[in-house]
Length: 540
Image (tube, rainbow, N blue to C red):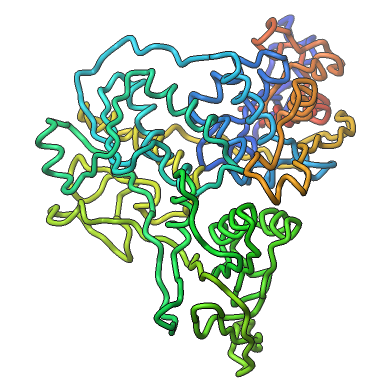
């Protein structure tokens, strides 16, 4: 039988008189993965940049954030911030307003004119990116910082892709979008607008590109077979939102019916309201089943948008729409009732989803397309060597944050492929779960809510609906972060250790244990607020 650790010590040594000779377990400092970081589709080190923000060093926080995501001012407005859903602070009072602080940093960078560091080393490699939307420009940003020459080609007249042509101005002001796009161009990325790529292999050969990243957005609205009269005005939602960018706004009429239940349907209805129309959304399921985010639905209802739940459109005429009421069966699926209603309508807008134009891929060998999207491997590369794809073109949830994450991921794999290597993502730490925290040390600090535009202006103008935080509020919100799983040098372990076995290494260097004196009592583990210490058995 193995002897306890203390009995194996030489009784004649000075170590035998140290409290470290009692130990059967030793404390170890660890780093765990914060749930916010784990949840972020763009792969941001959220806790890392919040740490700098809470110290008041906003530029350092912004630079830390933009290592992963070049669009903080945009994302602070359009991201659905699922990181906050995962935030451990939400189990104490309210989640940290991560998205609010991100927007503050992005706006501060625009206000102060912060720029990305210049590229100092060139690789000599050239990469073609098709699509100047969130995924394409994210990839362009990361590839350029890696030293590659990047050319972005887009069929549209302006940059931004679905950020510009799919998100209304009241959610994303165009000066904010333009500023963050321009910052990427200033790195040396070439963008060619009004430049449609008809065949990817031809374009790569003509431009002598070494690799390509396909990031074409879902700009084609899906259609539905709806019986309609000759004079019925039926348009798709994507076309309506795209036309909002021009000088001449879409002529939808006074009474607008929107068919669909996603965020695009909400965006079209709210835009129509601001144009002076009386929009009605027709959706075949209940509100609980609506794919649109609940806060978007709530804001639309506040602004006077009407919704016909459990309804489907049966016929469209020049000035009226016939809808059939539905009811849920025992399995929760909507079924027709045979009960009809006619509502006045000058136009019908179809918001039933979008498809991607994949015609540029025709004839590309080894490339596989299934259900309207491109099959890619774990490295984001298609079946054709050197051609990568992301964003709306691949199987994934379609939103801006996911697209930005695809761009970063693809850039890393493209960079490795260009040098004949394989990129391997670093191993992730264990998740910093709530049960590892000592919440006694954290004071109550209610979440700061961003201000909303008054309802009258929301109904009649395209002014931004939601305001940002002041510097004071942003600082307060950043300081609500619990630093889950990672030491923030609170000195608790140093203060509670009964053996003075904790050694301070200096600001930013954390601590270490003097194991000659540590007897393994575990008080430091119990009293660490953020769960950054664990006990491990001694090797006997």
